[in-house]
Amino acid sequence: MSFSRRDFLTTTALGSLALGLQAKGSETGLLSESGADAPQAGSGKRPIIVCANNGFAYLDRAYEHLSKGGDTLDSAILVVTGPEDDPNDDSVGLGGLPNEEGVVELDACCMHGPTRRAGSVGGVRNIKNVSKVSKAVMELPGT
Image (cartoon, rainbow, N blue to C red):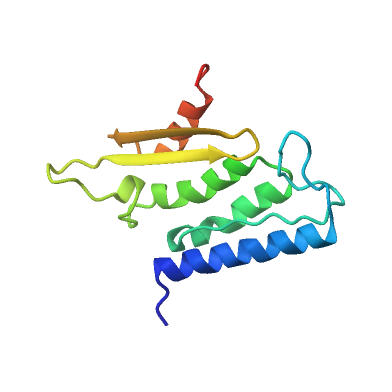
């Protein structure tokens, strides 16, 4: 059975919509006024993490972090750094494929939902965990 990127996005969107409608219909006021979306004790919300196939093996550690009240972006980066550290994954990080000049250049972006902040980098060389670099850019003062 093949599963295309379009199928993945469609399934993810419909699943998210269904969960949102279910939460809205059964409970109201789950989000704080600050917009934070971390699970609250007794709120009935459960953490959900969605990733590409190459991050599947790293979901458990991220889910555990998120379930214990960890930051959403830190949990996402726990998933992403798995493939970035894997020399056999040629899509990102250490095993990334080189450009036409034979140089591996990577890019990454991140978004932090609760604070509505984002960071991105492109053309990064000699750094395997560019996801962490994009988070560092997001955290720079004045950005």
